[in-house]
Amino acid sequence: MSIEIEYVFFYSDVMNTDRTIYINTCVFGVPKLPMVGEYIRQYPGRVGFEILPMFDLPEFEPVFETVLSEFKTCPISFHGPVYGAEHSAPRGSAEYEETMWHVRKTAAYAKLLCSSHFTMHLNNCIVEEGRKQTMLQNALENYKELADIFGAFGCRIFLENTGTKANKNMLLDQQEFTELCISKGFEVLIDIGHAHANGWDLPGLIRSLKGQIRAYHLHNNDGVRDQHNRLHEGTLDINSLMEVISLETPEAEWIIEYIRQEQEGNGLKQDIKELMEKRPLSAG
Image: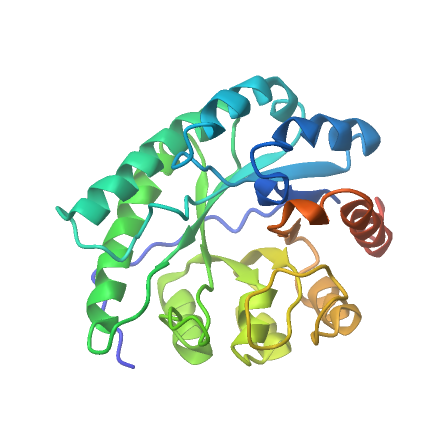
């Protein structure tokens, strides 16, 4: 696919240098969100959180407000809003306005919590035939706007590989995603579950983009569906992949991205412990 974009952005290559294991808050949902403090206390200095804002749920913000003091004690980043947000929507459309409402609310909290970065999906919706190029152009215009909003308080934008063939919402294939990120100098978050479900060559992807990869979403699946299973519950060989990740991108963040509340508890804690053992405090 030929990609012609007006904007070219180059970001700092400053990377996270700690051994923190990050947890996406989706696994807590709203009811369990107050439990984040338990993890902070159980793993002092070792855990951080990637906050998934859910402003589409009226009960989210009041509960979120009650745990702000906990989040202020550990490293924080923000995942872009998913529900009610569509970055491939054209400016002026109702979808765009709703998206930016979510973005502005997220930015206010990201500034408050000194978020290191904001993870962006180019799209969430189904990619309709003949609309791919237009959707990409819209999303990259939105990217520039996000970079201005979040960059104003030092929060960087990480671009995530998103969508799956099974859900018909994969906007870019591996080659297109790689070429786009290289040509625009984007900082990148690799979602290993999305890549695996789409049959991408993960070691090849990592080696191609290793100078720009800043973080990983870690979860597993059956190689077709985006199931967000635990580390070893799927057909992806996590142990082998983590060796590649550690070798090629030793400073990139590791983010556990589970989405079901039943995964919180002993299973999540076991996986945190395993990742800590793979990533000891000593980087040597």
